[in-house]
Length: 365
Image (cartoon, rainbow, N blue to C red; front, side, top):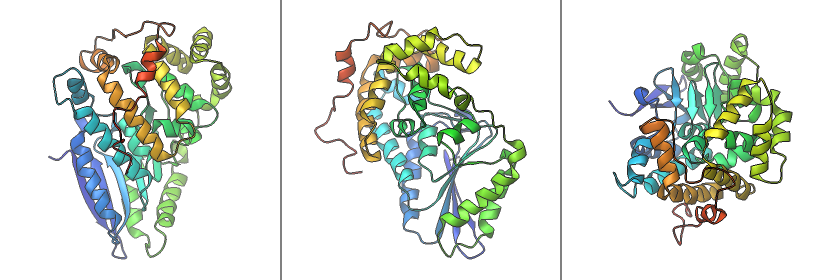
């Protein structure tokens, strides 16, 4: 069976709702190049199809919308076991897909149920109507594998309230539905049990005018029906002042020192401290630098800058070692290039931001 399923649903006035369903439940719907190459032409086709009024992006199974990218093939390529061009091809086409979602001229509903990480965050954040449920768990935990929050992370982390994006980028801490709404990563909360009603209600709408209005109307009504299932506890909002204080330092090392020195019984803060202790010191520097240099970039510029950093990361041993230790061999003991933040050579950090091309492959995106 195909790794992506496409379905069409007729509306009462002769239009079409189309569904893109990631269909790799065993791998938690991790985004592969095959998936990307199936989805992109469909989106390009529907853009000019007047009968298509709304797109739904979801997945098979209940555990995850999309738990990340194709790290298995990325890992093979990085250690010389696969196509050496794979990382560049994968990241280039992935970012084109993400950019397509961000700039799409029709409403796209993303049903972000279950785990949403890495590549899944890139897909979801590009959609116009992002739905979370009581089962949603989001994160960008790239620091633990020697990487950085890509797929537009430089954009959406920098657009979060205060310095919450910097904190979450450095620590990879998890985000629930209430957090996602507070941070601007989601637009609606809908109880997972109401998923079946989304298509039915969209089909019953009139689509003669602005397609965004009926889309919002359906989701608004379902959100209203979901309030009893909503847990408003938001660890990010609860710890907002703590996050602001921790990140108000003169250097990335200062931020990490203050975070690790904090004494708290809050498990959310403890998880952040644990991630920093075990994460890549080099990645911590890369994350802080990338968020700084991309702060005032346009969306297009963000993806171009991320492509440079991602391709350079694919050539460096840090990312490959992090994937090996946490996702392949799963021994949990990565041998990082630098053991501490003080050890990190800034000239090495600089090399990650040097473009390997005269013309960026995303220049004409």
